[in-house]
Image (cartoon, rainbow, N blue to C red):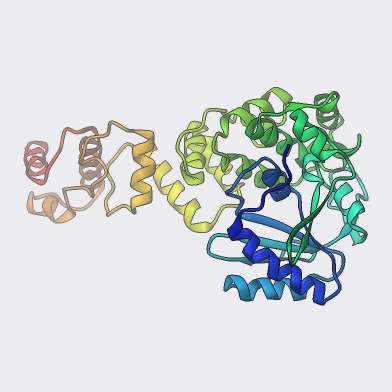
Length: 371
């Protein structure tokens, strides 16, 4: 396998950051997934993990000036995140992690780079690339990550890895399927042991849901979902969760799963850490599809798209606002009350099904309904 090849656009940002690190006397490294993907020859690597052997705040500030953003604290362990137009960089100090009990969040303390790499999930993500003002420097690979990457093997760093952090099992499914790797001997058994001993069940709902959403963001989420089902881990997300996903965006995929869960879909959606606007749109589309009735008001484009995903052969008028209004019923001699609402509800179902396709047809339908 060739040496890591950093895309020129990324290298143009990393060089001045390495210069800033040199001025502060701090070794700076790219670590984890970006190094792995550069070794694989991938050009589109928008997320960078950068580690300094010391406080990275000054380097993160330099990145913010370069990328036109600002350095913001991220997560519980002092990481600083800088977002640019096409690049995101996370800056952290090298640290060790100790787990007070299985599946708990770790306690962290400063440590040399080699110890920082040992806290990571898999050997292929435990490599670092020294960054110099002149460009890429030495590849630091104390745990055989390059060897495993060349062999197409996914290997944990130590036997207690899935006991310490069972979310790594979800990541294992992602990497095995995305990169076409094979599990190292014993990996499945270690994952199964964490589940059977009840350790994985100790994970908070938020941590499980975060890993699940990362899987939904994969280009092909179904293979890792099937793998997790075979390992028994998909039950941690939802015991009835299907592995067939529809749509391309995370919003479409969440909607398709919630719809497939029927009455449990609302509570499933509520358990996911998604933004409020997305949850609202998904709930509106779920309600619409279950009622199978045209809406009373104009739908947001995203809600229309979700409903069309569930019912791709809907009549053209189905997702338009109800052609009949309350004033039409008044003019026809109806008075507000249960029968008034019942007529509007029936008209909405008829418009959804295609029996009413226009305003003129709606008025004819009303005249027959009130005879």
